[in-house]
Amino acid sequence: MPAPAILEAMASTPPPSGPQPPAGKASSGPKQLPQGQAARPQGAELLAELMQTQRQLTQAMHESRDLRARLGRRSHQMQVLQHVSEILAATSKGGQVASVVLDVLAQEFQCRRGVVWTLEDGGGGYVPREGAGLSRPEWSALRLPAPNPFPEVPLVLFQSQFLDPVCGVESLRLLRGTDGAPLYFVPFEHQLLLLGFAILAMPSDRKLEDEDLDSISILQRQTAVSLYNAWLFRDLSEQRDALQRQALELERVNAALREADQLKSEFLALTSHELRTPLTGILGFTRLVMDGLYDDAEEMRSMLQDSYSSGQHLLGLLNDILDLAKIESGRLEVHVEPVSLAALIEEVKPIAEAYPRKPEVELSWPDAEELPEVMVDPSRLKQVLLNLLSNSLKFTKEGSVSAQVERRPGHLVLSVVDTGIGVSPEAQTRLFQKFAQAEGGHARQYGGTGLGLVICKHLMEMMGGTISLHSEGLGFGTTMRITVPIA
Image (cartoon, rainbow, N blue to C red; front, side, top):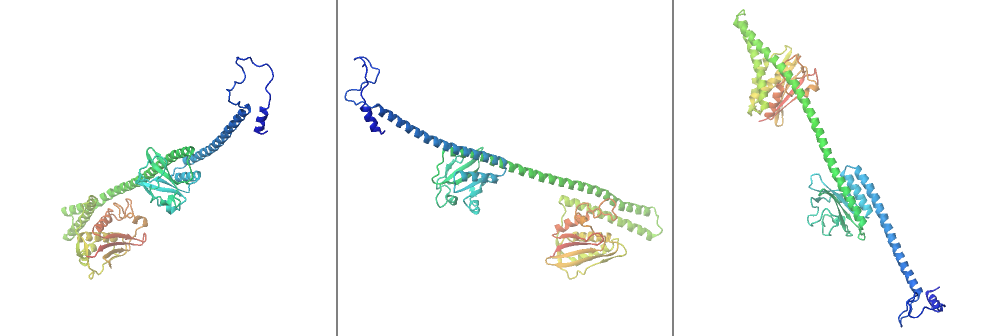
C-alpha cells in the first residue's frame, strides 16, 4: 500500500475505548504535544527509520565490496611478492634480479615503459640492466652517474617518489615518452648504499593506494638484499678465481723452481767435472815436464801445448760462469759500434779452425767482402760466433759445418748450419734456459756447462739482434741463426 494511503488510514482510526487516566496524573502513554503542534504519525517515524537503515546497509555493502576488492588485490600482491621472494632467493646474478623485478613492477602497475639500473663494480655510475617498452639500444644507453643519478635536482634517493618533469629531462626523455607519462622512482637501498633503482613510466590515471605502496616497499627491501647478495657473490667468485689463478701460478713457479734446482744440481756436478778435467790435464802435463819425463824437446813442446789448450778450455768455462753472473746481476755491458763483418769473420776463422773436430767434418766460410758494416760489440759478436761454431763442431760426427751470411732489409742474418745429431722438438724449447742441454742427465757424451746459448741470447738482445735455433729432429742437423742490425 502506498505511503499516503497508509497515513490516511491511520488518521481515520478511532481512538481506543476504555477508561482514561485521571486528570493531573502522569500517563504512561505518549506525551501530550504542545498546543498548536501537530501530532507526528507513528508510521512516518517507522518509515524514516527503515529508510535510514536501508541507506546504512547500502553503504555497508559498498564498503564491504571495496574491502573485498582491496583484500583480493592485497592477497594477489602478497602471492606475487612471495613468488618473487623465492625467485630472488634462488638467484645470485644482478641481471636476473633486475629482470624479475622489472617484470613484476611493469605487470602489477601497468607501466608503459621502465628501466632498472644497478651500481657498476667500480661505483662510478649506474648501468641499465633491464628495460621494458624500449628497444635494447635505447635503454642500454641510459647510463646515470653515481652516487646521485640526478645531480641537477636534489632528491631523497632512499624514498620512492614521482620524479619532477624537469628531473633528468634529457637522459630520460625516451623513458617519459611522447605521452609525457609521469615517472616513478623506486630505489633499492641497503645499508645506506643505493645499489640500484627502477624508474617506471606510470599511466596518468594510475593512483597508488596504500597497499600498493606497502607492496613496493616490501619489493624494495627484497631487491636491495638480493642485489647486495649478488654483489657479495660476485666479489667472492672473483676472489675465488683470483686465488685459483694464484694457486696455479704458485704451482707453476714451484715446478719451475724444482726443475731449476734439479738443473742447478746437474750443472754443479757437470761443472765440477768440466773444471776438473782441464785442470787435471794442466797439472799432469806440467808435472811430466817438471820431472823431465819426455824424450826430446818436441815431446816437451807437445805436452806444454796440451797444457796450454787445457788452460784455454778452463778459462772459457770460467768466463761463461762469470758472464752469467754479470747477466743475472745486470752488470754485463756491451759497447756497440760500426764493425766490418768481413774483418770480424777473418778473426774468427783461425780460432774456429783450431777447434777439435772429426776428420770427416768439413768447415766452410762465406764470402763477406761485399757486406756492409754492422752495429755490434765486436768482442761479444766474436764470442757468440765462436760459441755457435764450437757447438756445431762438437755435435757433428760427419758431414759439414758451414757459416753463411744473408743480407735482408735493415739487418744481416748469420747462420751456422751443421749435419750433426740435431735437436728434438722437446729439447728445443729449453735450450735457451740456464743449465739446460739437449740431452740432459749426467751421462752426457759431449760435455759443456749448458750456459753458452743462454749467454749468447742475452748478448744478442743487448746488441739489438736475435738468435734462434731450428732442427727437424734428432739426426737431421741443426741451424743456428743470429741477426745483427746494419750500421
